[in-house]
Image 1 (cartoon, helix red, strand yellow):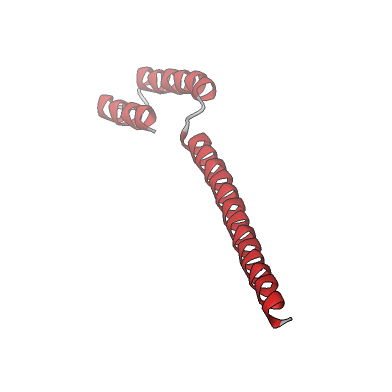
Image 2 (cartoon, rainbow, N blue to C red):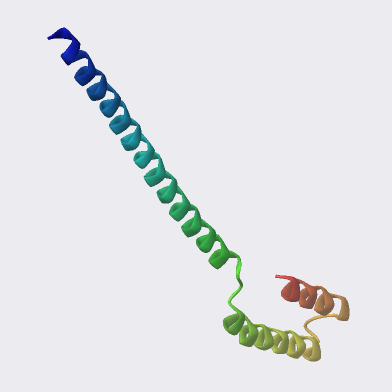
Length: 92
């Protein structure tokens, strides 16, 4: 009777080990998929933060340049101050 039990015990041990390894592998794949999704979300958020809003700043910049020009024409700004303010506006 002992000879019969050993092959069954061996099979059960091998099957149990394979089951445990399969669960471990599945958990690792799930973690990797979640990490990849998190990374994609962080990248898209960073891209949105870095992209300047083109439509909003375009009209606003034009109006600010017109105001600077009007101040220069009125004599409130010198040529050097006007150029400095214009460069600051265009850079930022």
